[in-house]
Length: 248
Image (tube, rainbow, N blue to C red; front, side, top):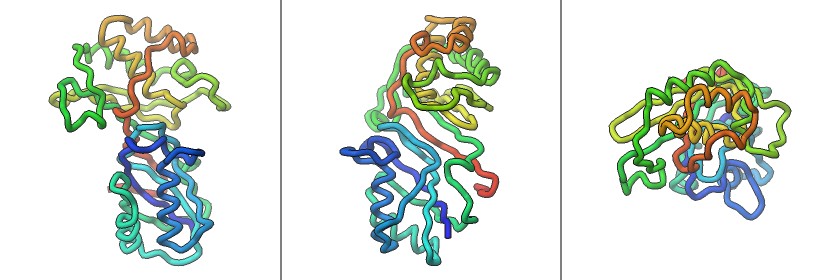
């Protein structure tokens, strides 16, 4: 039987989602917990995607196969008692055996948080940046993202992908008190894509580049022409949509 597990995590102490040698990852930590709680030393999990070192997720999905029935409420409680405080499981869902957490995801949404006022409680959960930014100009430039599909200019170089095409459905900034939040949704994302988009839009907000310059950067397909990559600790994976999982 195939089960989906819904979780969230603070990525501060992890080298991203994916299991890797000589580094602690969210996938590894969750796998170990599931193997203990379900008494299955061979159990493996597949995530909906990867998040880089220090990136957070308020919603992540992964799937695993297990031959016995699972009582969701009981298992969620057991897992949360076993997992460290920075990883929390919210649901376990029985689905069709062909359901796939990664390949069946129709849309992913990320948020990037910039804190404009020094706050000791948000130091690891948002990027502190107190220079004045023109949000109207940043939003005007962000609209261009919906008009393009090739985002090689925002991708980490030497990335092993078949295509740099992504279909972005929304990209906008909003201000909430002392926080600037950038929201972007797409069918898929490239490595480092959101962080380099934000860094380039910050240049727009500072007046260093124009909307026309932003378009030229996209059309160039050259990472060297785009802006800097903002720190990972301000980035959150916030939503993943599937046709067969309806979230309240």
